[in-house]
View 1 (cartoon, one colour):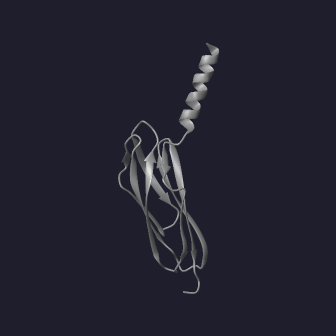
View 2 (cartoon, helix red, strand yellow):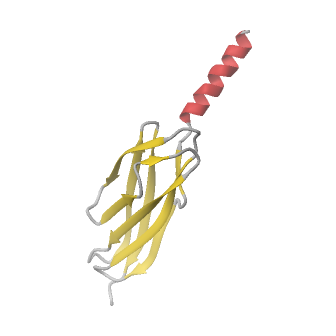
View 3 (cartoon, helix red, strand yellow):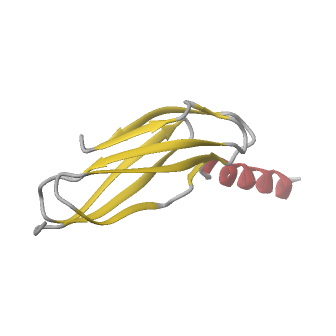
Length: 120
């Protein structure tokens, strides 16, 4: 009986610690880009759970990154579109930005990378 309870609690702990959502891309890399240019990417956010997931918020640390979701709710094992709009600034060199999607059980961050060219 004791072993059964420990096994049940361990399983429950690991099940609760897993993320309910996942991006179709771990990272968006725009490669070499012109200064002061706009770049867009469409990808997906998938619900890995058997329950409807509600997206609480999206946080981007920079005004150069805009993220729009197709819907706030994701049905079980379904996906929604994620629209990313990134504006490179007039700062030559490698840029790494990110945004985070929050839902009640987890937070998921996606990195954005590019190299802003200096001579263009």
